[in-house]
Length: 105
Image (tube, rainbow, N blue to C red; front, side, top):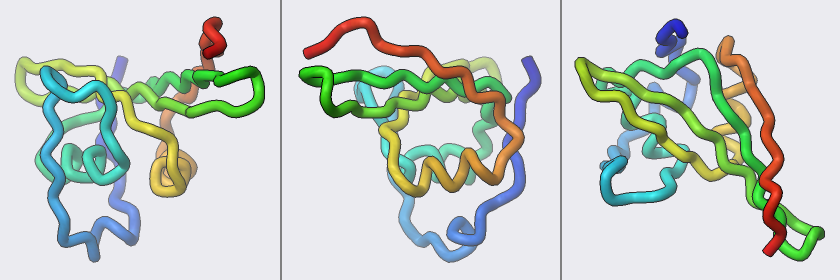
């Protein structure tokens, strides 16, 4: 699997926030955490997995799983779907693999 950091989005040049995220203590990340990881030199694998978690069969939460790498560290960054993440994925050459979550809450 190849690592891809890809070109920056326009919003990355203007973003002044930096959001720490730890794979060892935080289950989900936001788009700002993904942006910070890229800015700090983490590489993102080309394959991104989308899992939809359904609630009562009527609404769902989308979680994008990015494999991030830096030096010898490899982590799964589960990022909650939001407009920034959709825009990022539309502008990058990632392979999006969709998986449905079997559980309905």
